[in-house]
Length: 501
Image (cartoon, rainbow, N blue to C red; front, side):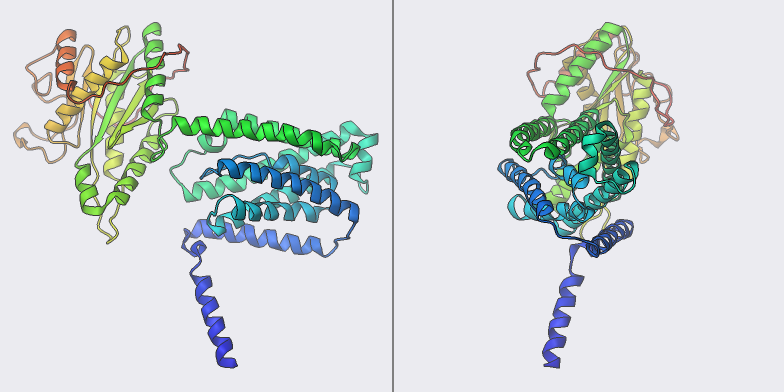
């Protein structure tokens, strides 16, 4: 018997040690442990003074049932990966305000268990952390709510005599819940994805507007439930409509993005870039377009496999997002080709930004399964639209493609640029095949105005040269109708060192 017990214990310990949570980075694992242990401890503490009431259980069951209906609604459209925005707080915040605190603590665990079972099987440790984070946020919201109300009052009875004060207390509790939940989720998200943009994921204007709408709807449901339980019959279709509107916004965002890298897809990038070029021409503002292409990407795929090649693409996209400014547009044109639009950027600054992107990508610590570091380099072609010039997006893309073609032909791992008035310039890699020119510092070749040319090129010859070179390399893409919209522009903040072109 003892032998069998030890065998079972050993087998169970092996399964525990095999949990995916132990593979998390130490800071993330420490956060996960702290939040989960704190959550479970709080539940045990609240359970000690729990008093069973049929009316409380009935109200709790009704609100949980509405939340389960919302889960089933999301099952039809499936649950998106990454950070998920939903409307479950519409049903769960009334539990915080109308029922004892133990109910608020356990409701996210019930809902996420149902989601794991009925919608999508995510890593269990992620579900556990999410339930703990939401439960702690609800528990703190309950504490704030009760702290604002007079000591010893019954929340449901107090609403009838002091409606305004009750709403203020509930509003403070809802804001506390949002702040704590966002803080815990943002911290874990950033630790897991250091290069990700928190602003784009959780603090975008549309996301904040949706959160505010969800909190307001939750307060209305809470108030309505004190009047009549039939409020749920009225609130359910309205909340379903709100949920569908949230999912519609998520689908629109997914339709704009490239699935593999998260950057703008080709169609969206061209639509927004065309509007930006039109604005730059109208306001006589400078602007630049850059095409980025991975060097010898096929060799990486053939040697190390397509899964590693996909990881390289994601790392490059993440690097571009981290290096570029907030108002720049980065997209993926397909395959290993990326594109950038740099508003309010003069030719020298565009050159510096492109060079900074190239340098950061060259330093990416991408390793093969065997531990071998995989060198990843890119070639970049830049086309600058000088202030006061008038060019179409297709012309700028053709010029950038011509500069990219020359960067490839000149040895790869470098930046070349075409300006509407300055011609071509380049940065050569450190292993320059022509050492007779001396140490390379960036910018123009010593003694020459244009790399690969005989002197300064006029506007017409540059564009003609670009069109000839790009004819076989750039795709013909029909541009959708352009909606002319102003985009806030700011002065370039490029700080990398390179000689002015």
